[in-house]
Length: 296
Ligand SMILES: [Fe+2]
Image (cartoon, rainbow, N blue to C red; front, side, top):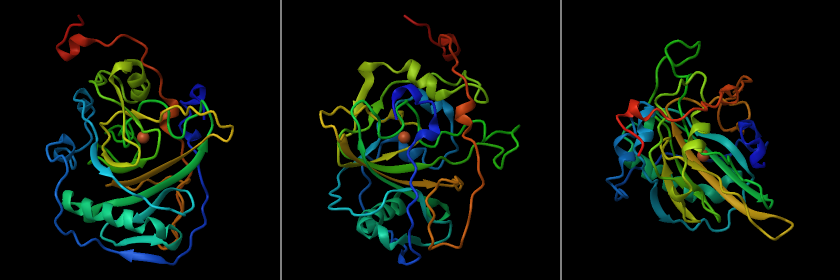
């Protein structure tokens, strides 16, 4: 994927791993563990409905430190469901080398999320050789779990209002994810026609960009604006990069490209378009007076 076609959200790589119906089933015990960076606002808004105003208040992700992922041998999976509400975790055996990591995340999650039982959980594992000048994941600034017009009163969709946000545990190897820590002014956009993600790109200042530390586990919520870095390498084979994400949501992500978990009852999701492809660039200066500010 190159930057020229980055608005094509569906260009994110898909995989068709065939997994088996045998594996490990477990429920975390929820034993006490210290809360990391307990004053990070992420914990306070963890169960609140999505609120686009939160982009005004920059927040770094919660850094859980270096996690030795050892030698993981598992096929790539995309948004593989591993837990449904009121159910246990079901991890197909092909992912056995990820069991310890998934269990550690599940235990931490149970400690910080009093509504853990109600959540859906899915995992993406993606190890790829990424060529020079290309991107491993989505290269434009965005928030994971952004709730747009699909969660609105006038739409012909399941959700008539914003729901509690999703959040994810994310670990990448070198190079880290790029974070942009600054206010983003997007409440004046019309979510049914303007792309907030393109506006993030327009407003992001180079000086405010930071990198996550390779090999560290982080907790991200939708308000942490980030993008995948461009890969720079001399090797004609490209650079090998690992991406692991475990996501908790209160609404099932019914995407037909999700890897199927045969440990659950058979299911299928309908084809759908990604509405982000139909949103337009706002294309005007930010009306700072609407935010009670004047530009110096
Ligand atoms: Fe992302």
